Length: 314
Image (cartoon, rainbow, N blue to C red):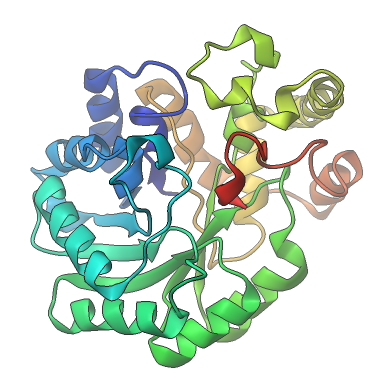
């Protein structure tokens, strides 16, 4: 089990830094070794990487730090819409990330989103150069399709792919997971708890503050919310029968999909962290897996991203 840190600085309401740092440090105590951030999570300020760097400074060499490049952050009004994976920009971002994280090497450097204006071979080559220089250890992709994965891997080995995957979001099962299994690439599911829907604290979109992405997420809107909430109630009933939380059921389901899968749930509370980490000790039977598939045969109702809010995240 890894730990995602996006929500510690953006997207899920006002963060509390001391709680986030305490959560990261407690994760290390519990044996978590993969910590995920990105340049853009700081909205151009570097705050997400800086927070993570401060939190792990006393045990940096005992953990893996993953961060991402791929956006043009020069215009604050276009933060989530402007892509830039030019080799010279990758190098610039990497130097910034090293400084923000307070480290001299990045364990996993991901291309955050595929840039249609830059051939993936050039991207792979640029990251490969950074690996040869010792500034990066492993090359990763995020939200890449099968053809892009194959082309990148043929240029420089791709170690890991990060894409949304959960009992709520199953699109990768059709053509992406078979490719990463074939090529021996690890898989890191982000939003493994459906951005918080697969918890006991979910509420309708209108009940979230304006700066919370769930206020605009299609899965929380009237019509889809009710269907998804009903599915979560059924999942919770199954979890109750096993003496676990619905979050633990959802994470155990992901872990049951293969040894190459390492989810990165995000949280700000050490208490939630401890609950999630123990999901790795949960064993699901064939009957449990069949019941989950019966409840959510194709994932959640509603689209992954609101086109009007975040069209580039597809």
